Length: 109
Image 1 (cartoon, rainbow, N blue to C red):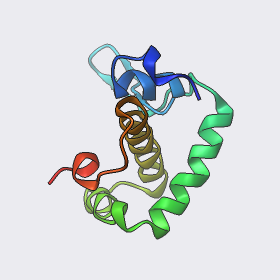
Image 2: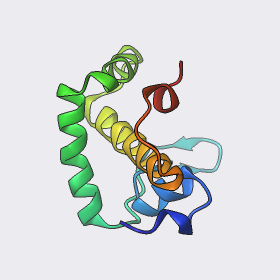
Image 3: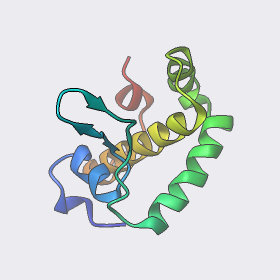
């Protein structure tokens, strides 16, 4: 994992890892499917993917987040990538602020 002090915010950290969405668009008429950017370390993404699958199926903190995405019609792979990105944001906050996990900060009130 890179040092979090090298990044100003969690979005930059997630982009460096390669779990941010990349949109395909050509002009105004061609809009393709979005996919993850895959710019960062494949080893970190592989570890995150397995972690996200476990979180999706077993972590109670993420249950509402997963239900919200399912209600919006997102498929399982998109939900996994969203969890991967959310985990990176949470890791960034924990490491940057040197504080324990707080569900209210991670998911709102």
